Image (cartoon, rainbow, N blue to C red):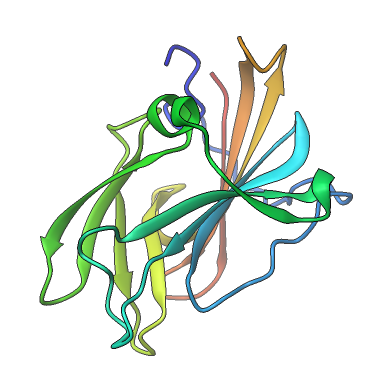
Length: 175
């Protein structure tokens, strides 16, 4: 995808900010990996871990990706086929099934790898490098210009927490 939001990594900013104040805060859950919010509307794409009753990832389908349609009372809605294949779907491959470690990439930018794993409390997490620090990914905000059919990404903000210190980590990426 030409103006891929995930592929715009490069420009680093050292400040920390949040999605717009009027955007809903996506509630945390024991399965939550991360979520994406966009400027086009408050609907949110959510990435949750699919966990088996024993607390490990479901090796057949480790990630559940769906919409929280806040414009429709927060209803859950599945991604369309096009959204899964071209934009917000996720490709996952097993690194170590025994250790519950997976490597994933959002389909719109497969070069940027996300590690999926379980922390010491067995809570699933997604990690990647944010502003040159290995971090637990919390959420992504995408500033978009134009229509839904041919959007142009103005910038992407990536938010997380340093895996060692727990401090907030932020990166703003401009195309």
